[in-house]
Amino acid sequence: MKDLSALVRQRSTMLGYPINLNFPPAEFFKWRERLNTAGLDQFNFNNVGDPFKQGHFSFNTHDLEKDLIERFGAVYGFVQKQVWGFLSNSGTDSNMHGIYIGRTLMQNRTGILPKIYFTHEAHYSIQILCNLMSLDWVVVDTEADGNMDIGDLEQKLNANADYPALIIATVGTTFKGAIDSIDGIQSKLKGRDYYLHLDAALFGGYLPHTPFADELLHSRRTDQSPRYHSIAVSCHKFFGYPSPAGLFITSQDIFEEFEAQFAKIHDPQYILQVPGTITCSRDSVKPAEFHFFSSDSELSRQKSDARQMLDNAGYLHKEMLTHLKHLEPVRTGQRSPIVYFRKPSEEIVDRYTLAVMQSDRNNEATAYAHVVVMPHVSKKTLDRFLEDLSTH
Image 1 (tube, rainbow, N blue to C red):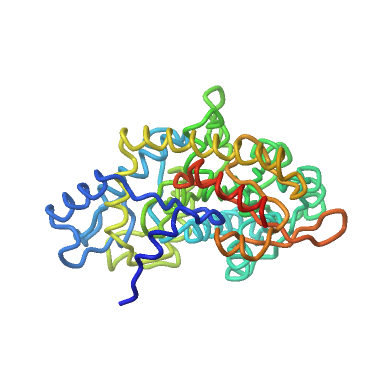
Image 2: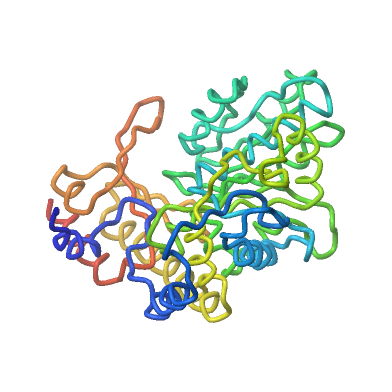
């Protein structure tokens, strides 16, 4: 078996990707032991089906999965007891369900397959999913910091006025950490048939624990009309769950409308219910384990991690502006833990596992790298990184 001990030593210097490499707290492993003692994972369990409905196959953890979705639904401002969702295989899986539900609803309401709108800063999985579902896509321009250009969205919506719109808003773009304006997008959709899905893979984990929590509210306290229809959040990024998984959350009324169409193509007799998910057999261990991260004590810890992340990102950006201005460091705002800058030496890129991308600047393709300040990234590590940048 491959020796992984060297990776444990390297984890503190991994700066380029949105993975929380802190060890989960000791209480998480105690929770795992409790699950095992209760009988979970001692033989085959399967979360096939809708966790909000009774099915014939009882060897599952639907009760914990349902409670998990209701708890996180409250975090994102969904109306209590009017939420639906499940724990998916990954953020991409959650995005797939959002796009599939949106496509189904728009086509059923209008008789026309929607066009899907997103920016070139959106996660690369969106293009794969569009191709998978045979959707014509419209790439919307971005502002300088990488967020969706709402004026260009309006122009492109008007140019495709005969088609319903399926829009992917990215709350935390992959490389630059930009946030598409949900309310700005909404302002251009009045009078149209549309479905708005949020890809909040990383930012969706920590924003609810910051002064910017309103960014992700499904409905505002003064207005109960929904600001979006569904949301995808990764479990293995901010939260630090030690395996890929994702939250997919939508409202009960959206799901019921979708389910009515889904039932026409899926025979529910075999498991005595319409499952509502593209995937049939589903992991029963992950929802039970991830339920730990919805507890009050864990939400409190997440608030502390979120504050540390943003404080350290601000520190890194300030230090780079002061001492390494030639690298042109950029942070898209106080909500983002990402700082991007001109690509340093290959030695630095390799040492800190930096992600590198080409970006147009002044009509010229320039190589940039970025640091994603995750909970495992300490100020001590950032100081070492800054020192290495200054000497290479």
